[in-house]
Amino acid sequence: MNLIRTAMLLAFMTALFMGVGYLIGGQGGMMIALVIAAGMNFFSYWNSDRMVLSAYHAQEVDERTAPEFYNMVKDLTARANLPMPRVYVFENDQPNAFATGRNPQNAAVAASTGLLRSLSPEEVAGVMAHELAHVENRDTLTMTITATLAGAISMLSNFAFFFGGSRDDRNNPLGFVGILIAMIVAPLAAMLVQMAISRTREYAADRRGAEICGNPRWLASALAKIAGAATRIHNDDAERNPATAHMFIINPLSGQRMDNLFSTHPNTENRIAALEQMATDGQFRSTDRDVAAKAGRRSRTVPDTGWGRGGTSSRKGPWS
Image (cartoon, rainbow, N blue to C red; front, side, top):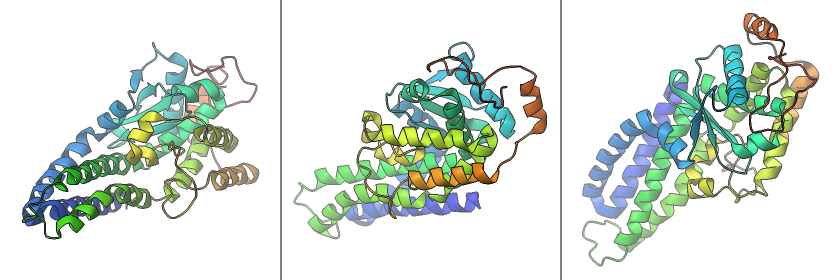
């Protein structure tokens, strides 16, 4: 089902890309856009994760540079029975995180320094478990490719702005009207991406993340803190790359106003309510009893993130 969904999304975004090319340069422009889109699809499949990580200046970390945070992700990955992803940290005061990569074998998870500084270890564990759920569900391929194509459409639409100054409309079937339509496609493309990335994925990732970390309230608490901070703390990189907003656990854009058809994420209060209901009903389970037992023999509390407040927690988790 994920493969079909991804193929349909790619086909739609490719058609949109070609449509902009047609409005700019007629059939010739459409064919050029088709060739570019085909190359973009191929390139983004293999490299879109690197492009997204580069856009946020993310730095890869390991057991030496960020031992507590890295080992936290490692333990959660073992509980989810997933291959170990690459782990990144990006400098930003806004607490947030995202996952990327074309498949679980080539995945990466990234957290902001703001997330690691302002959230408790339990809350960080809930967030990273959510991102690993996206990896497990293979949502990351769709997220990264659509972000790349949406960015390409925006650039092509900006290119139309320069064509608007030309008086020679022989290659443009709709003339200046076509240029205006092409220029408007850029903001519409962002909304189309938001619609294409189903908001139910976030609910599914919340549920699975709660199972992986072992406590829905950890993620619920993290969502409340991140959502509150996102409205106060500006994320310049996200504002420059709005097509990537749907990749984050909470919308990082300052322009978010309402939870409607065009929202990138479900209403945070609804997500928290669903997690609280899971905790009340006990609707979660340990992912892997053997891994949990192995982690238990380490006699550790939930680890500090390396950027966080330090200390230990009395609450028990997969590392206790």
